[in-house]
Image (tube, rainbow, N blue to C red):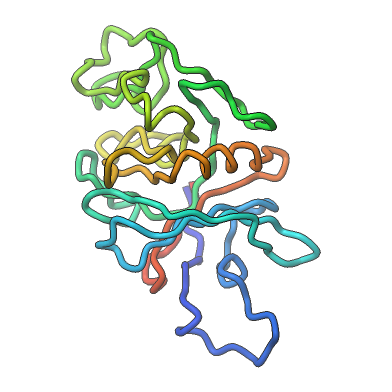
Length: 230
């Protein structure tokens, strides 16, 4: 993990030279992950449970919007990823990779990201005492308690299509949180994930190209929260 000096800064906080093409949101960030695709999930403030998710392509030295959708965040808003605690229903701010996609349904046409189908034996282990903490498991290992984990097939709406967000994934810190995904909307705010309508999720999966190293940046419009790259 390394701290990247990047913020989701608002245009009102910047002094911009007159231009017919003001900087886009990614162009106001100091770190976008090094690739040529980026997803931004932006809330108005840390207490917000809704916001906007936008996906971008870098072309000819500029970031160009490819699509956007209304987004939902944790029921208790957003919090800095490094300080997040499991079970708080907060969405971690930061800049994250997207390790792989998964879903109960077949991958949308054009999907290039690694895509795992969910089966009855598919679990996401969230048990802090388990050696499989914050990992997909098939079947659920003996040291991963069911009541501390998610049986993925039980979330037929939310996990019809999803992307794993790389929060606390590569070197998991126990107690920080597990199972943070970009997925299809449920009935309301999430337990810490980012969610969008199903059509948007299908479009994102067909758009994302691992060769272009897509990342997801989660933050607030005021830009007070630093982006941490994992």
